[in-house]
Image (cartoon, rainbow, N blue to C red):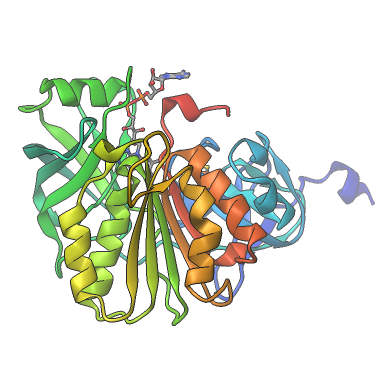
Length: 347
Ligand SMILES: Cc1cc2nc3c(=O)[nH]c(=O)nc-3n(C[C@H](O)[C@H](O)[C@H](O)COP(=O)(O)OP(=O)(O)OC[C@H]3O[C@@H](n4cnc5c(N)ncnc54)[C@H](O)[C@@H]3O)c2cc1C
Ligand code: FES
């Protein structure tokens, strides 16, 4: 009794379902802080509740939220029991379902920009050369720091990985008006700069399965989808797939040759559905890209066994998650990277 009243509150234990991973979380420590302190590759990026990378499913137990999970997670995710490990302090022992990061060495390397190519009026392909080969899984991203950086910026790899890693890393970067990094990048002011590049990060990759694949992208969100598809082609994946891509107008469409080349080599059926939201054109779908999800699922034979992969602006991802779950796709089969930026904080 006295021990209960006066004793130090015991640490809470977090176990990861389906693995032998279990760790103690100290008083007022978040689940993510405890996992990283104990050297577990728990998925994360921002650590402040905005990116969604540490999204995990609470299978049992209770947690307190430092900031509301609902700033970042959708209503469907909250209802299904998802939490953000970086904002969660356990109130009891808990069991989580989460896929830990792949067993690839995270490196901190020196890099510089060696090539830029305009893909659209506001998206460039930026190729980086780094002083040590970096390996990654198709769909992952790297963090970039430049002199006087207010913080890192994340950019997804746009090419399929090569065995043993590569010293040339390709990314697609969209100019964000008022953006601290992209304004400088697009002005050419960073062309001779020395960068620190850290990675790989993220757990956006193609999961095993034999059901159809629905990919949804907007803006520079095409980058990891191209990487993922190129890698799948190289590995001889035979699943049916539809790539839905949303832009405002025809001038926002890019990589059409690369997508056609993937289509020519794809072993199953693959379709590319570009959707324009502000310009009506013959032969093009018109409206929000999420408005075509239902038709794409029907075309792929229904939601059973379907996996969805999405990258792009947070509002697009949130709307797509709602639509996918409404169409019967399980949240466990929905994978995404939200391209959050400084304007996303606190939303
Ligand atoms: C996992 C992940 C992967 C990503 N991959 C890519 C990718 O492959 N390609 C890509 O183009 N982008 C990607 N991003 C986004 C990218 O990391 C940057 O956030 C983006 O390029 C903007 O950086 P910036 O420095 O130019 O803009 P920021 O300085 O971050 O500013 C963004 C916007 O917010 C406004 N702003 C600044 N401060 C505030 C504030 N306090 N409150 C409100 N608004 C504010 C700015 O005026 C600007 O309009 C990814 C993000 C994540 C999390
Ligand atoms: S690491 Fe938790 S939301 Fe970004």
